[in-house]
Image 1 (tube, one colour):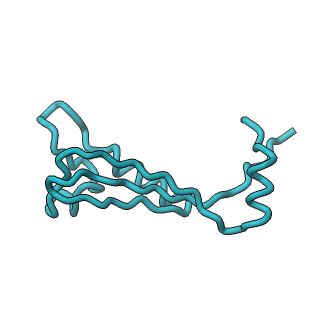
Image 2 (image 1 turned 90 degrees about the vertical axis):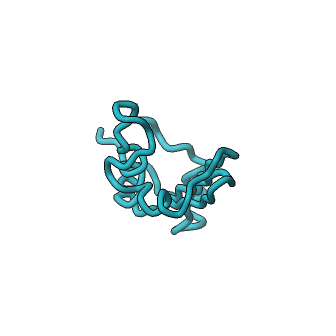
Length: 97
């Protein structure tokens, strides 16, 4: 396991409860409201049969929740999509000797 970077541990020590935010956006065709409502459901996909399982976003959402974080979607038909993943900043677990 990689060791935590000292500068990150210093930030964590000074700001407990701090979150890390990753935002990914595109300027594609976006999604309509009906699609946005289902996007995190397991096996939901807009792809053709055999071209995708529809598990990716469901797994991201579940993993974020297990880590105490969230994933959110902002999208509109014709206006691109924006996903924001937010996770609590935590010190690396101690490596057993």
